[in-house]
Length: 495
Image (cartoon, rainbow, N blue to C red; front, top):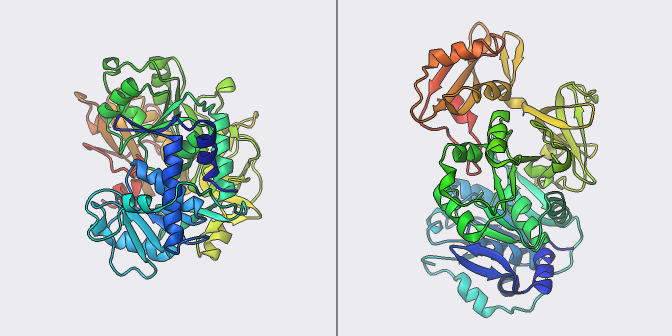
């Protein structure tokens, strides 16, 4: 088995079909596969092979896909680095993973420390190579005919580092079996067709962009319309020009788009919208459905399960739910004592199946805490209904304890999004000497909105229990976000 077989198969069946569209230029499956084979043979010639770690410190450019597939073909393990990381952060991941080779760009090269313990090769994909080999040079020297080596399904394919919100970043180790299962599951459940064009502006270094979009597209022999990042006007222009059919985002992106005059663009080619990585506020889902006469489909998963585990299907879609487990995946809700919770009860979401990671790279104790008896502990609080649909309540660590009462930020945020002046909202807890914690909300108001913090607090108190309502509201110009668009509440708490 090999993840690269997904693209190799597409190249065999449809060599002239576009695999990637970037800045208006198309790269066929035949060309993508040939380039990846050349780089794989160059890796092998430079002594990098089975089990060695190859780091990708790259933005969203076609070379990411080339180098990723090349690492797979050579039997190496692709280590994805957030392209926004700085020198000390880059050093940590390179040293922790034991990377022997690194693909990067001239712009990012200054962030690569010169004395990483195991790093032997740096290859520059675009920009000034500063004396290092260039990707073009490696491609010229390599052979286009090599096929990906056959590996055991449990062989490591990729290391994806967690954000480190609960400590230092940990490398979730995904096997070839994990990634291939996830890619086919996404292609099947999302209904990806060869004629589809998937809009990809979420970062390729993240599991959502890498597996649920790029590799799923390769599994479906579809086309990825690639963008360096999410710039609303450019992405909307691209949907119109490149006739995108499938749109993938996170809730904050859908919120941003609903605040624009979308009638300026011809978006008629889009047939499908998908949101993941954070809970979608129901009010935003309703507004999107009213605007486009189709729902935003939601899925659930996490880096540690490759990520796809649960999907809210189109044939029986339930607003506010993340759906039911995908084929061959089991999910359940456990209480604090490890007992399964009946429908309607709250507890931790646990996942079992072929997408669950092999473990955290070099961290057996962390792995043992995360995976118990084959069940991955998600760290998310959820519930189910009588029909087996799952609902994500919130992250365990985000729960706010107000005088002994549990307050879940997502519930308060759902209410805030119904306020006509609220564009974006983030709810979090702050310490209080009497109550333990109180609820605070940071809000980005809509343009022209005139509501005051006091008015918003009063509005909330009319619609929820007093202990749940924000004790204070701060109006801000923007909310801190990760590269995938997740709101970073830890930065709000730290202010």
